[in-house]
Image (cartoon, rainbow over all chains, first blue to last red):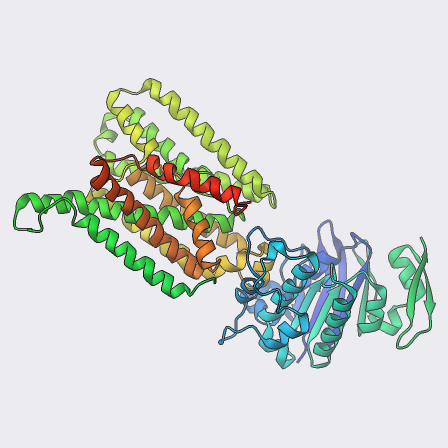
Length: 250
Length: 320
């Protein structure tokens, strides 16, 4: 059962003003935008982690500001951008500390899908950037594992593909698409217009603290919208399944 | 968890009990019908044992939890200035307090220590909030506070009479032999309650390892948690300084070496720190009684052991 995420004229000082969103239904929402467009701030606000300066973000018509952090954490997983760590925790520690299951076991499916078996006993500080990112994605998912498997989770992922190689990017996106089909909602930011075009059901385009366009991928991913979003010209090549955008000039 | 933590905790608990038993029953004939034996037990060995245990536990647990809260494995109540803040206010009371206050020194000193510890903790907390993400800045600020308090205490020496200088030396060097049962009756409940509060948040501290925003997304309010832990640490360290003076290295090295042994899970690490810190100070007290036949300044012993261990950890690259 998916949530209705609603924001009416929300403001966050210095980041965005009078921004409105209405989204319901499962699947992947990709938030695209240039650097400094306010993507991370918007995701934090939608996740209920940063209060707005004006307006309310509501999940199923209930303001998130009125919900406790624990209540939000039960069904919403949030991946922060560039999480840092000062201690030599192992991959297993990073996951176990967020594991709320009764058994305390790390789900085999999670290990398999994100290729974690070699990382569980490795110190986080000795992992490569991509390995650290996979551990942190797993941390986000394990926190809401039960609702995720039931198709009731909301995942808000701030640039989940950063530092991942192509193979891991594709593997993750295929899994997220599968989780979306099962009823989960995934809202993620990324910089790859073709990943968004291929895997997203809905696309939000952000520019300078405003949403330029939002809606089904086939309506929003137009050459004109992408040019306005990124100040960059794109060409479109017809390829299966949804075509490919090629940036050609600034 | 690198080893079965429950077994380690059981072993540490047994070791601590043995050390406590040895210290408690040291130096007197086991016959409580004799008045002198009763006096040795109640007025010397029992306060000494309790002082060693609660002081060691307070400093080690505070060190372990402050390291997580300040996101720096080098944080220690001594290094970041909490102990020196407590000592400084205590020194002011010792040297400059009016006669009326000096008459109630056993009770005014703990209050003075809490005040100093709370003030320096507040200062460190404000700095950590202001310099968000700059972990070394908090440590450097702590070193600056410690240096400043040392300088002020040096100046206070100039105004101190002979007795006050002796008392002041106690604060600087640390001693387990000063507190009586009345002082402990005030300080011990504060330490125990503070440690229980810290222990109750062990799971939340685990989540805080990965940063504020991640902790918040997992349902933990990082600012509230940090404030709770820092106030609890200030109370525990203030009470510990009130009864035993300033003791070096315990809060830094005990958590560090226990993490190598037990891993990072605070649900096991914090009780292990409490028991290990208690055991180390019990052993220092036993060393004083059995080897040195004198009340050794505790910081002298802990620094003698801790200094080389710290250098070893740095050379091995364990502390970054």
